[in-house]
Amino acid sequence: MPLSEFQLIQRYFASLDSAPQVALGVGDDCALLELPPGEQLATSIDTMVSGVHFPEDARPEDLAWRAVAAAASDLAAMGADPLGMTLALTLPDANERWLQGFAEGLAKVAEVFALPLVGGDTTRGPLAVAVQVMGSLPAGSALLRSGAAAGDRLCISGTPGDAAAGLALLQGRWQPPQEFEDYLRQRFYRPVPRITLGRSLREIASAAIDVSDGLLADAGHIAYSSGVRLAIDAALVPLSPALAAAAGGQALQWALAGGDDYELLFTLPAGVALPAQCTVIGAVTSGDGVDCLDSPGIATGYEHFRSGGQPV
Ligand code: ADP
Ligand code: MG
Image 1 (cartoon, rainbow, N blue to C red):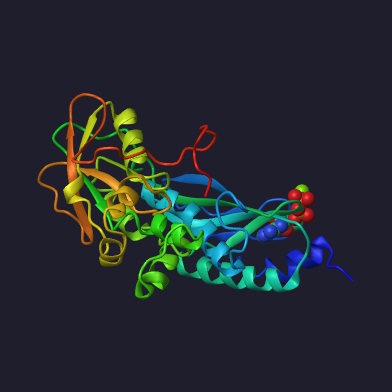
Image 2: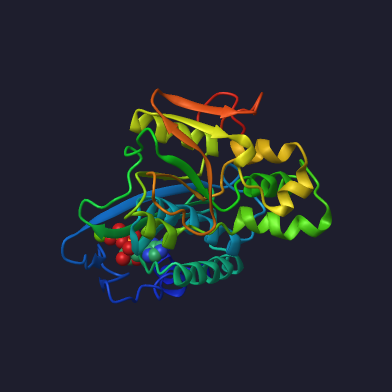
């Protein structure tokens, strides 16, 4: 007998909702969350469609991780503390093996990033996963895209480009030396939202964004919102040892234009110390747009609905 929607929710999605801030979790018409006094709610949603945002043969555990991590990355980019999430799941059928794997992945990522699953929606249709995240931060303290000023340094966390290389590997478009395969696949399927970093940047950075569409494209959003020019020095962009060794000249292309890294790109006023595992890659000047020195022929990041954009 196929599972009813109610049974499916009870079996797989009803038990991840306990946390002190959850006054009421799964089971009623709405969940109720406590917001600390004086704090604002930060909320964002991300949808991932099979064959567009992840390969059709993705493992359900990996899919759960990537969907939640991508959504949580928006909280990181605002400097918000995680409060909880909801999940809208569209499934072609109630395949219990798939659901078991997905629920296990979900439980893991929910715990690691302190995001109790407080509700959602379950419908039938082509496989798609939408995760809405909620977070909180002291009123007026959010890290916006609009605060960069001439004289600030442009910085990035981690090593961009690995996820794009991982995707090229998964899609059979590129073959790295075998010793790098696992690392690069993980970087696509298991991105780590920089929540702790984002929280610490709340006090010191002038602007921030998470890199989902590609470093250059996302830099463009800061430049536009802040009304400044960003000058990136391509030689300063940090590459992981795997990417640098494996991908040769393609490495910089992926680092600048590949998406899906979920690292934080941010601007720091002069005199503020650079946080650990972050690198200065350029400067904020007056003007507009993004300048990338020493990068002839680099395409910008993938934009949805742009004709000719290559779906992942
Ligand atoms: P409603 O019809 O009031 O929207 P539903 O029957 O869709 O409620 O869902 C019942 C309860 O189960 C609600 O609390 C809802 O938030 C929760 N829920 C539904 N689908 C999911 C899911 N995939 N993950 C977590 N909670 C879910
Ligand atoms: Mg209802």
